Image (cartoon, rainbow, N blue to C red; front, side, top):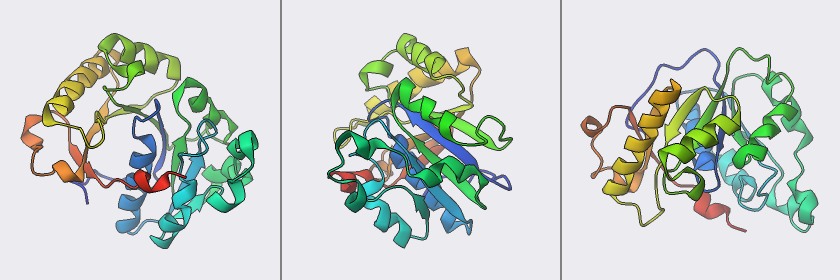
Length: 227
């Protein structure tokens, strides 16, 4: 599925944060499934209380059929709840105590990132890595200055994933420009960039040798998540 296979620690615990339409949920899913394919026990946790109707909930059953354990409300038990549909599944609070790898899909924006504080053990976990997903085409992160400000306001960030895209209108020039700007900010902040995420449909257009960081081709699941 992916263009590279990084060394995987004994236990993977990752929290994906990012602005609206950054692709954090997509990357959370792809990372969880990548680990599952490699034989790991994986729990994917929906911690998005900001936008409850474009989350993992509508595709929960699809992901479970692929072998993931998904802590989330489903479409059926969240629909019609209005704002209360944004509440967390109580099991999410204790997710870090589960066996196997844990992937956390956090709500977008600065306030969304604060949801991680509701998870028991998050501040003490030695394995946890908080990964900021940056899409250079989004208004909040469309310049080096705004990316820098955005990351600083997120709080803890252990790594960055460059995920510049415009959906079906994405071009190689858009990806290259966004990646260049994101890498420049990462260097200023001394934060590592784990990889560049690219839609698998562009596999023949994007070459690893053109980039300083690993390229990871992802499959898009979130278009199925619209209510």
